[in-house]
Image (tube, rainbow, N blue to C red):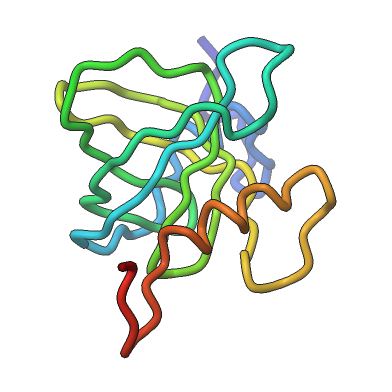
Amino acid sequence: MPDTDSMQADQPLNDQSLSAYQSRPPRKRTLLSGKLVYRDRPFLPDGSFTIDCSIRDISEGGAKIVLDKRQLLPPEFFLIVVKYCTAHWARVVWLKYPARGLQFSKTYKLDAGLPDELKFIRELWGNLYVRPGTTNW
């Protein structure tokens, strides 16, 4: 065990110990609709599988989602937040049925320019989003 008297107060913490003590960004409680998007096999196109979910809280760094059914999810996938016009590259960091905690590693604005390989996400979002004053039928 290090001698605390010999440690200097301005000594930087290493990355691992710093992340262990950082609190997560504050999450906003919500009741939003979302869609999880992934592919099940390498030879299938992206967006081959979609699952509806409810988003119960959300922040810059992650979200709590609830699925209607017990379902296995891949290690990483996109979470489309319909109302906010965003897609998050996410991974599951905790599970307490029926909820799952997600951590975001990248966020994309769907009304901005997207790389060609991600344009399918905008199309999925466009099919989900109901513009004010219009209907889906």
